Length: 512
Ligand SMILES: Nc1ncnc2c1ncn2[C@@H]1O[C@H](COP(=O)(O)OP(=O)(O)O)[C@@H](O)[C@H]1O
Ligand SMILES: [Mg+2]
Image 1 (cartoon, rainbow, N blue to C red):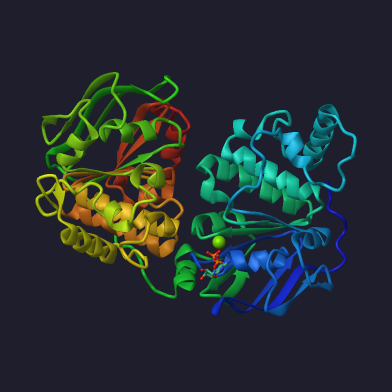
Image 2: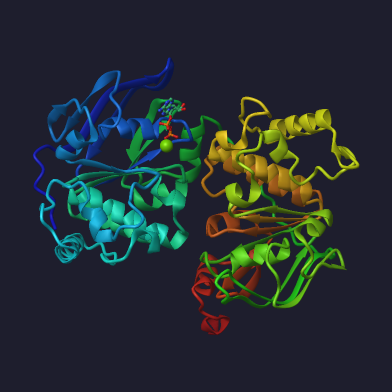
């Protein structure tokens, strides 16, 4: 469908937008111009002001100063309904769907266009018509709780578009998505702008921004830094603009002949639903190397990390660490053997959100002589340990007595990553360690992994970000449907071959 023919050349012209929260300046005279038919990336580190600016354009916050012109007409939105009426809709980081209700019901909930007397059948038919019109499909009869995160997001997008939005603002939409879902979303975004709409794509992931956007605006510390065409932009240049710093991660790859720290032989395991998730996996990680595991998420990577760290039982096979058999050993025994684990679900598995930062800092160390005598914790030693860790990990928190859950996600993640790097004297299992982090925090976590490796530990890096795997790994294993499909030295790794293996195409496909 073609969106209504726009009157003005630009969809939105925001100028001089200023906003402070209790004296703290979040936006300082920011300009943003959005053209019709473009994907406009809003790029910036955590706290740069991306969400605040979007909330002002979408009528959720009111600016202290500045103007917002939509399609040639100046507006002063007092609420989101007025913004939607002017054609601006936003999909937030946290979805606002009603889980027990169906997709069709959610699409019509609160819509002024929903007929008063309506049956589920009519709602479903209307939902189908809308989906056909927009080329965006989700089973309209499914309940929200039955959908994947990617599908729920699609419902949110449909909801906003069904209200007539011609400018769609997506606030960090990929933060919750798998690589495949993100790829699908990019398809949707391109399709929307091809039909004349405008999409604002908020992200701090440079690769994504380079892949999907037409133009990029960089914000830093509440200020507009630059607006430019995406064509010709580089990740390095953008990172510099975002952070204001010239920093490059220095990764030297190595070929290691040292002895194995971790050996998996014929390892099989089931997932939480009882299905085979790992099937006869053989894998060796040597001291002093990073082995990256590439793969589309959901191909056994999570279970791989869990069996190694004692969180999931093996069905068959053996796991040894430094020659000691740790097959089906407890998580505590495995940690005692020097195996650290940065879990995929940092907040759920890696942290106790209600407990203070200091307790989380020592969560895996408190049985040491440094921190406890018999069953008694040494309180000052715990505080000192926590303060050291907080400083080393550059965690921003008011104090180590603050509940960990009150810190931002990025800070929680840094705390867990550095804590586990300490546990992993011999081996560090890192599952998506930089997911959701901004550029600087990503580099810090990656540096921590490299430092561990350079100290002689083995590192197993699981990531669905192929760029990260290629950047960090000395060797690369590719997983597909619970099997290791191939193993490469970094020097021999080629993106196309790895991509094919990730999709389940076996090596024979490469025979001349
Ligand atoms: N509702 C709010 N109350 C107080 N401070 C806020 C609020 N929203 C944002 N801020 C502050 O404004 C700044 C910009 O935040 P935000 O727009 O969320 O950044 P981004 O989306 O780029 O990460 C940050 O310093 C943040 O702490
Ligand atoms: Mg934000």
